[in-house]
Amino acid sequence: MQIFSIILIATVVFVFLIRKSVRNARKRKMSTWQVGDIIILTTGEGILRGWTLDFIYISKQDSPKTTKKLKINRLEYNKSAYWRNNFDECQKTMGVEPQFNRDAVASMASSNGRRNGSKIIDGKSIELLTEIECQIYLKECLKDEDYETAELIKKQLEKYR
Image (cartoon, rainbow, N blue to C red):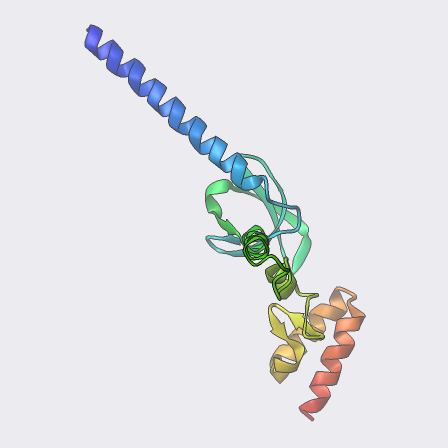
């Protein structure tokens, strides 16, 4: 009976220590996160709106006003924090600023991003969109009242006529 009690207590302490270790590691990882980061989920991408140690709050790029609460285990990794870390490591090693944006991934993935002066939609330059993609994105931009992007898409559509 005494050995059973010792094993039970040891198991409880072991589980407690592992859980505490996992939560501490999670806290360290989350310390570099920022609201607005691009995160990779098991089911796609999202924009980080908030977090706790057990949950993340995200929205999709196409519906930024709708926030969802997901369990932390749905998270693959924080893409923006990963690239900020890459930039910082390069700068530390090289002694000069690397030739890429510290938030390079976030700006490329953003539907409002720019790459080489060209407007980016879902990671693709407007100049590279097909006619059908242009028509779809034009409707979305007009619905979202993004008239600047809509004008650029209209110019691209004119090239197909």
